[in-house]
Figure 1 (cartoon, rainbow, N blue to C red):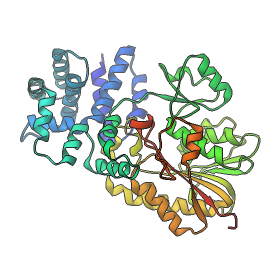
Figure 2 (figure 1 turned 30 degrees about the vertical axis):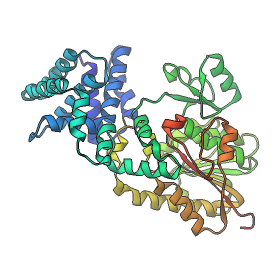
Figure 3 (figure 1 turned 120 degrees about the vertical axis):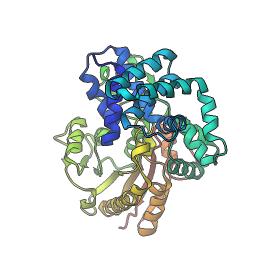
Figure 4 (figure 1 turned 120 degrees about the horizontal axis):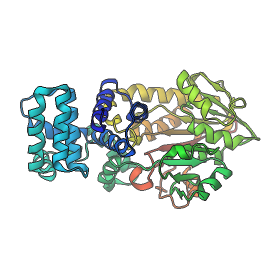
Length: 440
């Protein structure tokens, strides 16, 4: 019978081989196996945990196996063992023996090596190993090992924090990226809000429509108007809904998978119209399924760059980005994303901003958002857009967010908004609001 550790190992191997997201693979894999709820939880903790701490576990393995080359499967199995030893309440003998038994199933000759590595790691102790690995290292290398983040991501996070007046919060942010986030729900309609309140769910602290999920989120998704959505994403759509002309035509320019589109659809219901663009067919289908009334809200398989000029009162551009703001939920992103991907991403973002400015009616609003705090994708993009387009101006978004969520702690010296997991409990979502001049 396949056990939880074997399932976790298979998931890790698949994630690393195909660069797939664990949050997409996990439900499908669990559906194949008849295992207890406890084992389901074990699979989730093992797979997510190893993906979060992969860099640190690799450093420990390399330290304890000098000069040896380990197969990817063996390395992943030992990572599972280290996670049980150092970050789970699994008895030492069980963590080691179960890992060795797992290795015997696919690489019998390496069972002794896996046993030795784990026993040596347990004897040395986690804190002592970290001290050895970071002794004499520069700050960036030390943080990389301690918090299991690539150096380039740490540098990018540091710059973004400094821009937001949070220079001293780097350790808090990196730590938050390694925490398991609470599943957030959005109640789009007043009826949905009332139903979730009646069920006793706790309200979110960032979004006025947010709730913290208790148990399996599937229990709540049968309620009309309830979706799983991070509170940062909720705020993007809610803020646009608050400031834009609800009697006009709105465009969700990169609408997949549809969470924000569902909020915008409700906002213009009965007063205006929403059109959704999504260039990828599969994601466009997800948008259609997210909408309450897809017959009244066209979902077009279309690029944002092809939007017609002077056609929309408001545009949401939730731009393709590095996605480093959601490392809590997508831990593998820190290993699959690279700085070499940024030039093509930022070029695409600029193209979409230019297209959106042209597509706005005079006086129209553009909400630009990314689930990435990297300055090159956020403030730098907005500054460049303002330089390119003399007919747009930056609207102060901070008062809008504070009116939506009075308890939200934001930097009031800037007009753009950067949310943080360690401060707001959200993804590291960035948003900026641009307005086109009335005359052109």
